[in-house]
Length: 433
Image (cartoon, rainbow, N blue to C red; front, side, top):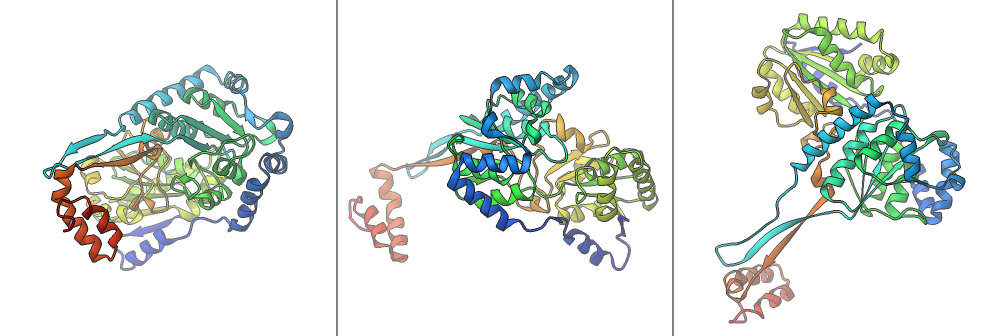
């Protein structure tokens, strides 16, 4: 059964702490297996990919070729019905528009000492995007990863996608087409990550890898970090809903289950100031679980990791929210902006009764790739800056170096780095500090 907590109870602090510290990643350590796969791909390249494709996905990529041609993408995308393709197009345009507003400005100025300083932003040369092919197809994830990279100006955007049985998922292919991705490969798992990081005969290496995946993919990304950049490794999905009793319990139940249906180890939490309302939401959850197509997954998530928390006032929710640092935070209350202003840690915040988190998964515009497992304490969701890098600029002339150089010489000598000191002092008129 889901945990039921009341902030008025004497043992609330201990039980709440146990809730947020509970381990939800049930997958076994696969580091040794993944390390062997990565090493094999580094050593044998395409040959290893062909063998692993046949072993794990029953795909004869030696015959089909690793690259998914544009004609294949177009043909698969054409299978998507007009209404669904139109919905994907709406999502793509909104995601593109939102991320375009994140473009940072370069800066170059002269400070009071006459030193010219600044920074400039440049896109990465090449990024690899991993598209999972497990329990469900996620064309929305294609859009959320590829579009920011393309808007940032990345020259080469590469997608790796598993194709079990050799079948191309039409929705995923449609998303590639709408995003503007023209380089895609039929390979998944840890081997795809290794190929993107180190390159093979058919796949040129990239500079950064993003995109969700299972424990093999996540572990592979950690192992290749340093050779390439990676995004924040994603864990099980989660949602925290703060709601008052003016909501329809069925709405809130649906919001909680929108994340529970992702995975058996997803987590859905309600915070409310009305215990009776919490009970009504719990009843609505049970009713909806009985009719959901993914009922088994959602039930396992709700029964093991769900929580109903009652607080005295909704103002008391803020410290609990920050302690959880949820991936998704819904504020289904009368004045959501006021509570949102006091929240420091959340991946994304959805304001008001008519902003279900699910709208953010698809068409709102902001990225749905968000920090999980409390990582919102120190990390942000995927955004345009993940596909760019900042370079600083410094320019001194003789006069400005005379003003700041002596301090640099003094600090270098204090650190015992006399070569550093000399490289500045030799340019000063005095020759020393």
